[in-house]
Amino acid sequence: MNRHLSAIRAQFPLLQRKMRGAPLAYLDNAATALKPKAVIEAVGDYYARYGVSVHRGTYQLSEEATTAYEETRQHCIRFLGGNDDYVIIFTRGATESINLIAHSFIEHYLRAGDEILLSECEHHANIVPWQQAAARQRLKLRALKVHAQSGALLEEELASWRHPATRLLTLTAMSNITGYRPPLRRLISEAQQAGIYTVIDGAQEAPHSWRPMTDLNCDFYLFSAHKIFGPTGVGILCARRSLLERCPPFLGGGNIILRVEIEQSSYRNLPARFEAGTPNIAGVVGLQAALKWYSALDHTTALAHEQEIANYALKELQKLSRLHIYGDPVTFKSPIISFNLANIHPHDVAAIVDQHGVAIRVGHHCAQPYLRALGSDSVARASFSIYNQKSDVDQLLEGLAHACELFN
Amino acid sequence: MAIESELYQEIILEHFRDRSNRRILTEATHSAVGDNPLCGDMLTLYLQLQKEHTSINELSFQGQGCAICCASANMLCEALRNKDLNEARHLYHLVHSMLTAEAGEEQKPLQQLESHFEELGTLIGVRKFPLRIKCALLAWRAFEQILNEIGN
Image 1 (tube, each protein chain N blue to C red):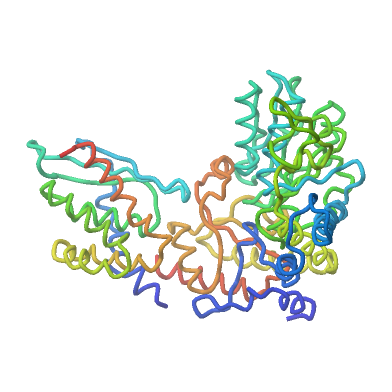
Image 2: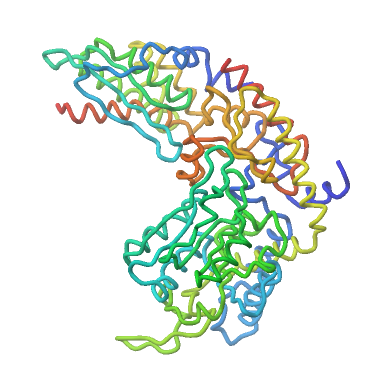
């Protein structure tokens, strides 16, 4: 193992665990990333040393907590490659970030008959909130179709995607099934020419990139802390300040108000207007530690290593005659590989590879329309991160061979 | 590997491979769909009652599911064929409590089940894989729907 990789692995306590007697081969990174010591310690340190509420105390501890919480916004902007045009709102996750836009923004900016455009390769979090918004406000909803084999958006769809009623385009930056990355730069630039607002769901892309918003110029970019080595329960919404400034609050409660009377209230400016109640302070502090940790890495080397492991997995998996791979991970340079073994249900595959210490996810992966378009309703998925190693793939291959033998 | 002695025992694999009960029963008097939306598993259980509606004449199933789900559905068909409805209801309760009872409470239903249809006892291995209990119960839950439809 090279020095770079062993230094990264040493920082993840969970990688020391044995699973059913075998070393843990964690290949469910698209669901959530493991946490480095720096993050685990930062969360503990907050509770042990300054674990009080933010914004409202006038004592030293509260100042310390408020500073740590507020400083995290700058770390987020820096990680994303955003600028002063954008504001960071903390939510409970990527899902809540999308719901915030689908409520507050849509309510203020869209009218009955306007169209929201998404794509077939979205996961449910980037479909369902828009369906609900469409029902509330009598909006149209349309999805760009994908190629049934490659899983990429169809060229003919991309050639004429703008309709007169289209007002908002929402897309994933990376599919959680195939790793497909839609041509965002081109689509966002075309959207801007037509005055169409743009939302980018970066939940899958964020941990595989560095400064993903640089030159992207979208109106909203969102991701979740837990997929990028941070704690669960924190989402990040990076929004164009000038757009969100005019929107009403999403959730009502304390912190968002200037003055409350029994009949009505007036609201604070950004970002406070969108952070009702006591936030997940420990989670936000942990996110800061995750971003600092990630920023201090040699990204080029770490992400190239991740790609090398994914390529190795792909090359070996392609040798198995019984194995069908969904989408086109070679072209997509994807850190995510979804597959099925002929005549073996993915649940059985997962149970057997688990015996070899391998954690993979199976099922519909909260992306039923995309899977249906690819001709399946349940797949096994191996997804890679910067701490994975060749032997993780070898354990997976042993497990798959075992499954083939058992169900021959 | 322990998995062959617990989850994927040979008897379970045999029931999984058996295709004889996997068909649409055109003469069915009842059918019910069991699904686990989170895994995408779905199967339809078909059942034909005898003329007097007191016993089961024939059963079959069709759909998709993992080996545990299909093996359990196949055992259900084999175990309940030609059974009196009351006995079938009793077997359903035994399977349900063998798989879901508190630890230590599963031996009694297991012994009773084995005296009726021994192979059903092999499903007890699923208890060591809590996430798979819903797979083993899928067809039985469909059967429960049919029982509710038939009434007492």
